[in-house]
Length: 250
Image 1 (cartoon, rainbow, N blue to C red):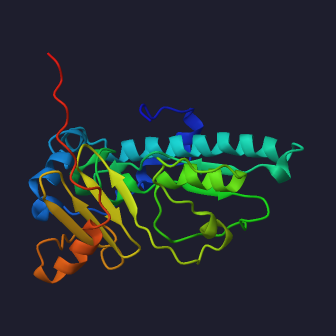
Image 2: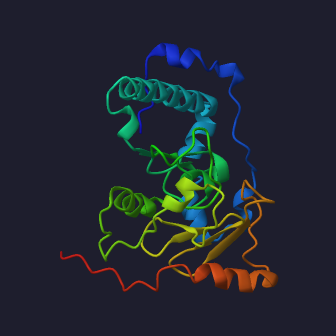
């Protein structure tokens, strides 16, 4: 989280003249509906960084912060490895959101595209997970609680709607029938599968991307009539239309 401030030596590992800007298009917002443009907020942080010329410096600070965090995680894991609980302790590590650095002229979190919704998500379950294994299925953080419940033998409460990913921890290539769903703001949702991302805003505006052919989400396919069935299929995973938000008392 802001501010990105860590000891100087962590900055020195990422010389400013070697920093690369993220892949981006200057006209990337041209095929985005108004709701998406408002989320991008191109006249906010992005305009400020362009004016100040500090775009690369911001990325350098983020990388330095990540490196510092990695070091501290390493200290914690080293202590666990040296403890008597090494072989009977599960680890679940996740972050709550990704971070944009100018993709779609957007910064920080607060959006439904790839960079803001992709998070670090790691599990270590003694006797189940394999070191250095990786799963390419699309899951969301609603899986944390039900997975922990299953692993420790606690019944999942009825009100919990997430799905346990225990089968994927045992076999990363196992079949998986659920997409990852992300919500930002009332009625704004993203559905992510292994091949597509579908975004529907509260007012019905849409975005659709082919995640394999278009990993940077530069080509919004939502207006293509040939994608109607796919959009309908992906939209079926979304929550039913929410009731109007309660009015605040004055």
